[in-house]
Length: 306
Image (cartoon, rainbow, N blue to C red; front, side, top):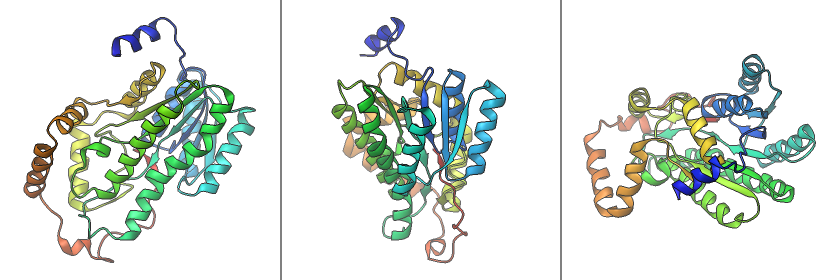
């Protein structure tokens, strides 16, 4: 399949990422900003949507300064259906027709607490952005692309969607949902001219840990792993857009994600046992830090690219 994908690409198959009319959520930083800049470099016009309008404006200025392409900053809280409805309407008005590529990228990090100590507010916050944000984008933009007779959707999930690491319950569940949604849509849209790709990276050097709800010990571990093993968001964006042009459904940029994917599928019981052992060996946060009101002020999180 990999050989056939590359052969079709070499023979001049559709390159949806080139000259695209693109909508990118979470475009104010991280992978979202990298997607927006790379699409502009490929001759596209980009709508940069973000809950932080100032960050989105910064991305637009970078596009203008670096590539001289037209881009538009739009405020959007993807957890709110009405905001994404407005984004879909704005896209048709700005482009004068349907977009050709939609990247549902906005997301947040959360981790460090086991199930039973997380609290319903954190569950609702994480699922509202990471899962419902993508559901809103797909439900509202898929009809536009289908009616236009073609286009592409890239959903940003995570290797967390299948690794199921302990103390990351809300993040794992949200990203597993995005992965399953993408697989479902790929089957539903087969033959429609609309391609679906789902990105499942491990660690990418973004601010998702700093902007999220992550306990101190887990934050230090995540930042060290990003620094030691993380890919740059620019590399991940280029790799994902190229894979989308080739018609690939799954994008696992790092070798460790591919190894874990196969290990879990072939040795599920051993894999789960190993995760449990590893979780007991890793440093743990002070349980007192899990109590309501004892953690950091979490009222100003940003919904950013992951």
